Image 1: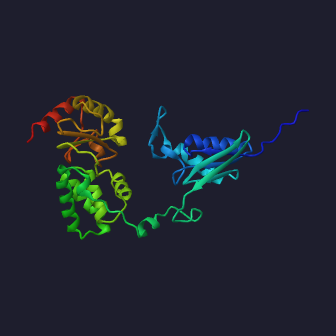
Image 2 (image 1 turned 90 degrees about the vertical axis):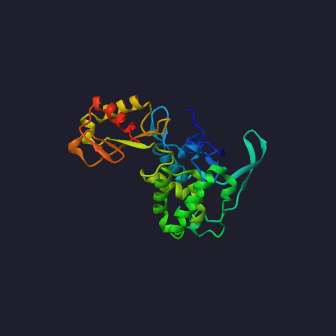
Image 3 (image 1 turned 30 degrees about the vertical axis):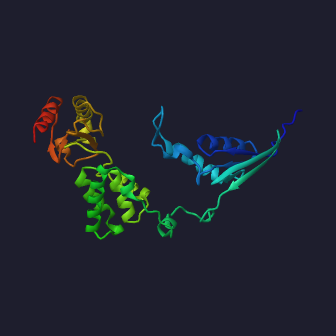
Length: 291
């Protein structure tokens, strides 16, 4: 009777993206000791930065998150983050590898990802904003600084400052966000995170007229989807975009709170209920003529 030999030795996987993680898990489940080396501070690679995956349109984090947890907890996998392979010597089946593990300012075994270390870090990198951006952005930065000074440059005023800047320019320019990050001494990622969390903020210039189509349940069953398609066709843009002449921005909302009037379309805050396909073009033309 043939006896299948058990795996022996260890394996190194370089690169802890989704492919490296899956390779490490397959090898570890086969009985090998696996060293997973990643040059960045965390594993997951580009996939953790994606929203959807092609072609299934599945949630990227829904796919990779279970693998991240399994990889970090697997008894046969040792994760070496913030590390680089410096030297490989030996021959096939008998390698010696030298890994340079970079120093950290925290103990990774005790890190919970709370972010307190970022808030209390004594080292602050300040941006020289006027030297980074073109002259046409200086006016935006100066206006942003004026708004910041109105609130005393306090961190707790972040959302209020963002609201005022968004109202002033119609969106949140990159230079304005960097200026807010610098003057409030907040990580730029935290400022962007706040902006992306609230739908009221926009990172792209919006049109003079903002059209919102309610896609709530009541409006949806009454044909809101067809209304949206007709507006996209007539304006020549998909939902979430702005026309080239910056006259209209088309967007959707989950509910406008007027279900009895569905399907309902809001233009610059004005409600237009019981919308039909025939009325959409007339509605757009009406606002296009307004000065």
